[in-house]
Image (cartoon, rainbow, N blue to C red):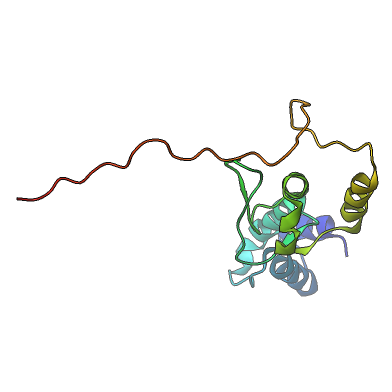
Length: 151
């Protein structure tokens, strides 16, 4: 069955019961929740499935995990917003956090292993400068405010 053909039929209101059940099953598989709305919302469900499939990643993070993309980076990755680009950037910056992933595609691990084995491989930052060690987060320099004593 072709999802786009079935989706067009569902939106026009001419889908069979089997095609409607297919959309409901895809909704459950892609979004992770059962479709519990009325028949008139199947078209909305179809568009949600398409939107989610476009943003789906081949990388899978364990449930309940929230990871910072890089050192000092304000972006976070979690199961609901992961993309291939974010996951690759995160694993390039922090390879030791691969343990928080349920699945990492083989082509990424093979490419990473080739880079590690290459003696000419030098990690660089976004400006092209060589990275020698992990950046140190600056510590808080200001003194905490003193509480006034009550009389």
